[in-house]
Structure formats: structure tokens, C-alpha cells
Image 1: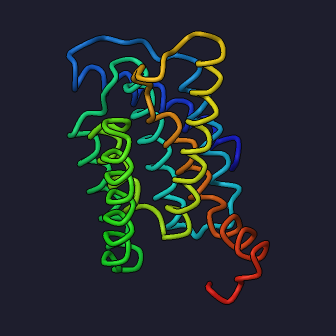
Image 2: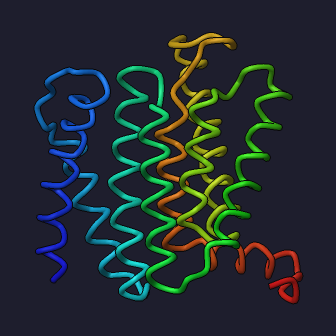
Image 3: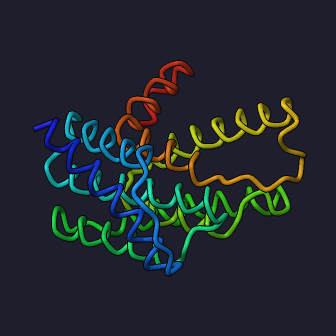
Length: 211
């Protein structure tokens, strides 16, 4: 089952990204090994997780969305609105079919987007509108622990990458850098292990009663 899901993820990510370039930019792009591999590994990890069957379907769609958004942001420096909207609608449908609860996911999405908007305003353009919309779309697939841990991982990952580029002279303080790859890493980690990460952090602070 794991190997089958990996093969499906490999194929779906490769041709999904290529199809997105064709749809959004009218550009022919051949499936590349790295985003196909990301899809395959992502599908395998979702399959191995303790998620319910319904949650796994949400996880598979999330993997395809995150890989596509990250790839397009790296290539074009933007995340298409139609991609964000399509992903959000798929996640809402997954919730409607599985548990019928869509209020909490929308609150999580709104809270995450509001936080990143505040970061964008405080950093005076450090985050783009596409990043904020990506947070909102991904938030529909996550609970609040996934959103909190995902944003934390993304900010840490993005910060370390920026420092590395600055130290190597590959970027300046105001050089715009794609943030979608870091959000993709963060939200995938948050989807799979968000609750464990938040519980571990609260336990470290002796605040376990919050959960």
C-alpha cells in the first residue's frame, strides 16, 4: 500500500505541476524528478500516518497543492489565486464529506492568514499576498495545532535560509525570496505531527493543561 501510494504521488505531483503551468501560464513544462519525488514521499508519509481514511484524502490533496504552490513560487515568484481557491474548495469538500464540520477549519484559516498579514505589515512587505492566501487555503486542511506548528516551522526554515543566503552573499536584506517552499514544509509537518509538536512545546513550558 505504501509503495503504491508513493508511485501515485510521484505521478500525480509530476503531471499535476506540469498541468498547472499549462493551465495558469499556457506553458509546457516536463515533469521534473524533484517535485515528483516530493509528491511520492509526501503520499507515502500520509499513508503511514495514523490519520483516518478521510484525513488521508485531505493529506494527499494537501501534498499536491503544497508541491505545486512551492514549485510555481520558485519559478515565477507568485502563487496563482485560482490555485489557492481551488485547493481551499477541495479541502472544504473533504470536511463536508467526512465530518460535516467546516466552521473550525475556516476559523483556523482566517487566524493563520491574519497572523501572516500582520507579519507582512510589520515587515513592510516581507510577505506577499500569495503567501497570505496560501496560508488561508492550507488552513482549511489543518487544525489549530497544525497551523501553529506549521507557521513556526515555516518561519524558522525561512529565517535560517535567509541568513544562509546573506552570509554567502547571495541575497541582500531587501531581496525578495520565495516563501511558499517554507510554508509547504511547515504545513506538511503541521498536518502530520502538529499536535505532537505543540504538546511537546507546552510540556516543556509546563502548560500541558492548555490542550
